[in-house]
Length: 271
Image (cartoon, helix red, strand yellow):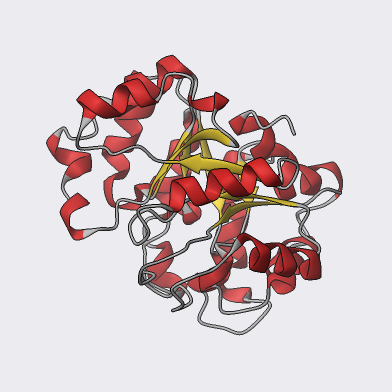
């Protein structure tokens, strides 16, 4: 079984946000060493542009050097559509680029899902065949409307769609609204960062039922394992075995889809 992590970061400057490792540099060589130790075959880099403006270029250099190990969900600026829209033409011809990802966590971005700033993005990405991942938990009704208006646009809900910075039952308070989005065939979900929602030590049993409900809703072709490893409260190996050994409902070919095959297909990564 080939294991592909649906979300990792590398960066060369800045102060990482949230619970990420507080180091100003995390290189592709460091990432590869950790991947090899844990048994991770490949990963999808999400450039952390919010703290390192050069993160896209760093990710593309990594993918150019290691095309079998890395793909990218990159970024263009959202608040300058007149200059950003042309950048999406031929986006997949850039090294590693398979789509786009926007966490929308900066203070100045909090209103963007509601005030029209993003309106240009969805049709542009749909036209170019670029999947878009985002932390949709703050704007689930608007996200549903986007999915309905743009049926050819492949969308990805980040981090299980759960409530950021909450843990245990509080993190899962919007679970019904998240699972309801599975009715749109163009919506998938990254089960990334799952251990960070737990109040318990490994194997994080208090999140198993929630993960099961998400899996049942989205199925193995739209439910993607991953870590966001630089902010996980456990080892990379434990992030893997949480899914491969501790969830009895995840077995056989379905496990292989969740652990990497499905995300590769969803973003069109052919390496």
